[in-house]
Image (cartoon, rainbow, N blue to C red; front, top):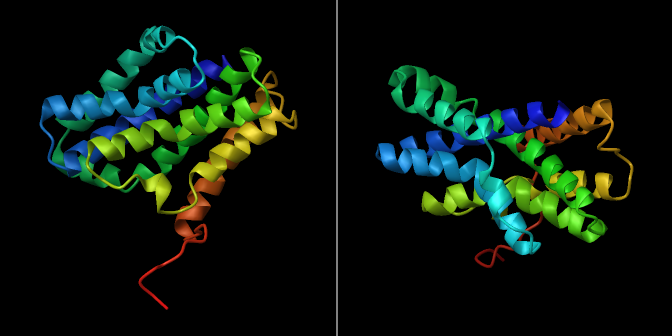
Amino acid sequence: MTWEILNILAVGAFAFSGAIVALNERYDIFGTFILGIATPFAGGIIRNIALDVPVVHVWEQGYLLYVAFGTIAIVYFFPKSWVMSWDRWNIYLDAIGLSAFALQGASFAIKNDFPIGGVIFAAILTGVGGGVTRDVLAQRRPMVLHQEIYAVWALLAGLLIGIGVVDIQSAWQTYTLFIAVIALRVLSYHLGWHLRFRDLYRL
């Protein structure tokens, strides 16, 4: 039940995020649905390819595909004024998707008996893969590579699960980590936390 709820939240949040980005970039209805579908599911595909695991089960999502399609349809067909007001919440929805998918990726790796490195890698790829795909398809620089601290929170989730600090079989521990990653991502956005980078154009 825990993972079903997290999956619904993650798919809905990332589908919403992808559709909003598509509308901001003036994509047509086909492009909006493609971007909205790619954002929640691309991370799992990238993870499976990287870990040499069959991709086919990613598409055996059943009701999650309907959640994604329904979310995209709401974004596309609802009044423009409503959608624009929802856009301000995109950062929070993106944080929900990041957190839920990072935990899902780590859980996937644990269930497939991957070592700690694989658990962390799976958490990062699943958490940020959809967002990177969204930005690339929208012809934007991937946010994860140059803006606020983002992938680090997925790495942290994978690390805590991989070393056993958080037991993914425990609902309360899973939800606590889920909320903590969301809070850290939102804080890093509002407080402007950045990883260090070099500016070659300034002395």
